[in-house]
Image (cartoon, rainbow, N blue to C red; front, top):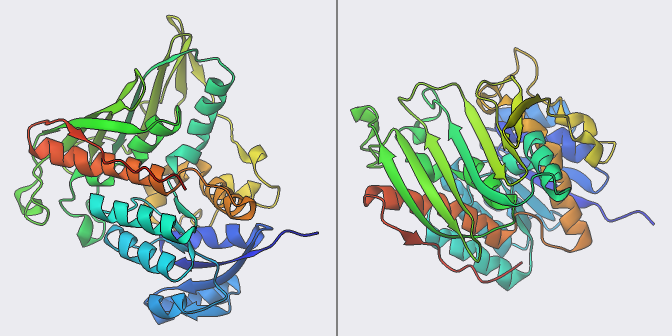
Length: 371
């Protein structure tokens, strides 16, 4: 007997268009509808991918009883409201990062998932990237030994991005570096302390009241002897784009390459060795495995900023889709679920609050519900 297919609607078709062919190929999905405020663009994409249902109004889309789940790829300030509306309309939710821009909205989403019994997954790319999957495999095989410390960074120049990014506090978009340090040991953050450093252009500061060029945060893990450090920059800092993830173990350690497309390094004791990171398409259904290395935004004349500066997100997109759909099919929690997504997101929100208060230690709220 064939498994149930879930009718998927994608909201936001910039970065979001990348996921359309993945859902179309996955045996558990029916790529049912798309939503984009610009009618001309929505219809153009619908024609290109053969999608019949096209919406320009999100509220109207949510009234469609045939939609099982929405995948939200809109600007970050819309994530919480749109996620809550979808859950209240009886739809499962996959949402690009971050979950929300306030602790209170993260709490509301967790509570709504608990109330409805629906599924929520934050689509954090780094924890399904080939680099993370490589380190995860090493860890699960026991090759790293005991994890002693984790470090991650996400440095990016956001000049030229849409206006709402201008002056954004670095830690308000920190899930790409917070996600992997919590995901590898499947840990929860207990409290944070963060420092801001340097200063961005004066005309960038007023929008969010954040002056810092770089924010760097220490995270204490709950019920663990581990801590981690994450670093984030968005403006006025000279650095090639980098999403990095380092893990220090008692037997082996992994350090992300300093220069994009060069080799990462494994240290065995005091002996370093460069390593080629393999692709992890073999973990996926054959129908979507090719999307780890090719997608919508590949040709020089068809690029999206998240790919130009994001190195294709480490081949993570089909892994994210597969996890979400399998969680729905198997009636289990995805990773990260609502509680874990809230913990990851609130690390960044509270880290910035700490930085504005001179590095004050701030505890994470208890997201006690486990979806």
